[in-house]
Image (cartoon, rainbow, N blue to C red; front, side):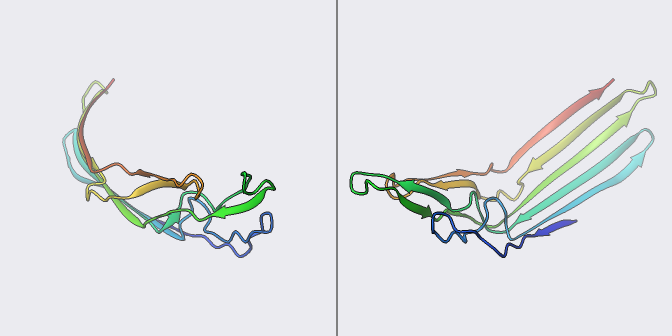
Length: 155
């Protein structure tokens, strides 16, 4: 298992703006659980099961956007800081079941069934707020449940 917890105590001002937003792409907490188990060994073959669960707390994609706006209404640069959309917490689970057969000549054949995001968690993986002048906030969503089969021949 692996986990993390970030702590920031000081945030320097930007152009006089208080920018104490969450740091970008840095959730307060995260954890990863990995299990790799040889379920069965028989002759020259083995059956293997891998499970990976990854938890990530709420996070913003980037820190508060800082900048200076100039427009007809404000010819002098005006410092701005936009709040960013929060990407909600998520737990993603991946699994893989494989059979590996090692041949007497040193070559190997394997077949595996695998799935990513097998619980079909819907989550935003990235977002960006362009601010009120553009009126646009963009987001990218994570991949849905995905399944597949791998067939490998090692020589």
